[in-house]
Length: 193
Image (tube, rainbow, N blue to C red; front, side, top):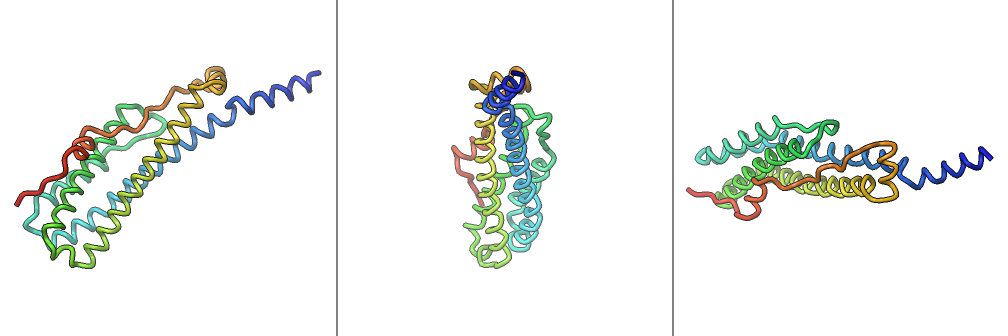
């Protein structure tokens, strides 16, 4: 009789989130690490890009300085998956948004100065930077999906019962576009000479 009860409990628990909730939490953490990795890749590329551009666009010092300053801010804000809050995520997103906006202004400079586009090194770095921006977008989309799946597990029956009884996880904050990113989406960067 005990074996039947234990077998029934084991079957019941496998279908109620006993494994899927912590597995999904691990997926969320891995997705956040991927975002951080892509932002780090971008931050590492920027000094090289700025160095090449400085050689060809010394007259556009303010734009380049803005990229350098935005990179410094973006790399100074870190998020820890173990201590993540909506405020920390918003601060991180805002810093990354400021960097994205500065990079957008830099890309506008290249459209106005054909000699920059002609340089092979600059084009290679620009292609890497554009690829990195695409990777960041993909990583953020994966993270958004992982958060949604995790939040569904901890909030929707029957797995939320397991969460309430065993794990006690709260819903995680979803990635949100910062005010800087919203402004960049609503108004294209403007470069004046």
